[in-house]
Image 1 (spheres, rainbow, N blue to C red):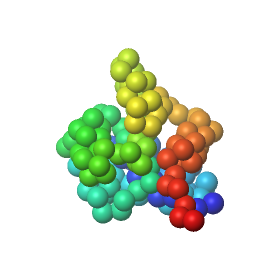
Image 2: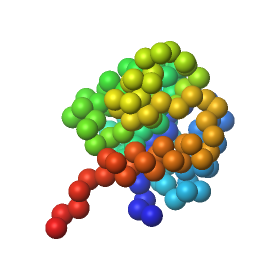
Image 3: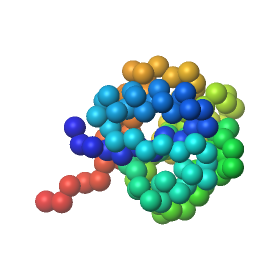
Image 4: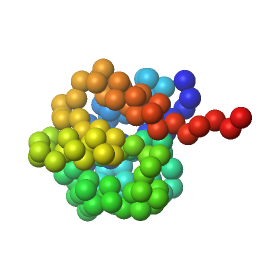
Length: 129
């Protein structure tokens, strides 16, 4: 497996720990952020292949962080964003479909890994010939 880098932004230390364990066990390189502002900073510095964002976070919520991340990545065409949140607003399915995915908490390990794997493969950059 390639060492895809995934940024996980959640204000819950428990969620960050659980998601990091799931992803590192599957072979991914994981970068953590504890709020939206740190997520934007980490995205700029680390250039992840995928971002997992909570919605309800201090400093900057997931919506604002997503907007800033999209600005950093020319609209996020090659950067899928997964909204992993307890929020259940109707627009999250549409937003997740547009930008990557929406997964409600608590998320099952198999569902998280299947979503991440699918998004990384569908957004993979073509190889030079």
